[in-house]
Length: 422
Image (cartoon, rainbow, N blue to C red; front, top):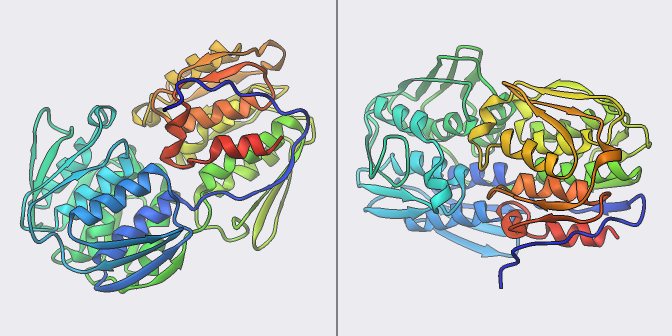
C-alpha cells in the first residue's frame, strides 16, 4: 500500500555517519543514451534504481535495445536508431522524456512519447521547436510543446537556434544525438546558458563513449559528426542526492561523509559542500569522499545558483537554521521543474514557520530556527522538495510530508537512510 503521509521523527542529536548515495541519475541517463547509440555492448555499474532510470531503460527497450539489469549493473546492446514504430512511456521523468524524444527522432518511423498526467503538464516546446528546425516531424496530440507527442525523423539539418536560459535538458538531449546528424550539430544560443555544468557533464559522458568533438562557448555549442563506441563505466554517486545527508550534518551540528564523491567529481552539484563551507561548516575532501562537519554556527549567503539549480531546495532548508539571511538568485526557470520549485517550496516552508519570500529570480530566506514547528507539507510530485523537507524534519518535530514515496524518482531508499541516521 502506498504511504500517503509520513511522520518524520527528528534525530536525537548531532549525526555522525558515513552515507552511501545512489549513482547519479543525470550521468546514468546520459550514458544510457550514448550506450544505446554505440554499436556493440556497453556496461554501466552503480546505476541508480530510481524511477527516472527505470523509465529510461523502459524507453530504450521499447525502441528495440537490449537492456539487462543485474543489481546496479546494466548491460546495453546499442546500434541503429529506431527501426519500427514505438510508444514510449516516461512516467514522471522529465529528463527521460526529453532525452528519449531526441533519440526517437533519429529514426524514420513514428515514435510516440507520453507520460503520467503531471509530466503532460510540463513544458517541451523548446525541444520540439528545435527538432522541427532539424527537419523532424513533430505532432503533439494536444497543445504545442506538450505530451503526448509523436516524432518522425530522420533529421535533415544540423543547425538550431535555441534559448540557453531554460532547462539544460533540452540542450543535452540534442547534444547526445549530435554525432548522428548529417554534418554534426550547431546549437546557436539565443540567451545566456544556464546550468552550464550539466552541459559540460554531457560532453564528458559523450567522451566516455569515444566522442570528444564538443565545443561549448557563450554563443554556441558545436558537436562534430562521428560515432560512439561501446564502453564500460562506473556511475559516480548522485551529487544532488548527496546534498541531503550533508545538509543534515550542517543543521544538526554533526558529521557526514559521502563516499565515492571526492575530488574531481564530474557533477557540478558536488559544489554543494563548498556552499556549506561558505555557510560556516567544516569541509574536507579526499580522492574518494567528501566530508562535512556542522559547527553549530550557520550563517546566510548570497548566491547565484543558475548553474546548480537542483540544490535550491536543500540550500533553502539549511538557510532556515542560519543566523543571517540567505538570498538565492538566478533560478527563475526552476518554476517549471517537477513543481514550481520557488513558489511551492516557499509556501510549504512557510507552513513550517519558515520566513521565506519568493523573488523574481529566487528566494530570500530569513533566520527562522526559533519559529519552526511541525506540520503537513505538500511534495507537489517533486522528489527534491520531499527530501529537503527531510532535512528540516531531522531537527524539527512533527514534519509530515505527503506522498513521501515521490523520492523513488531518484533515491527510493531516502527515508530508510534518514531513519538509519538515528
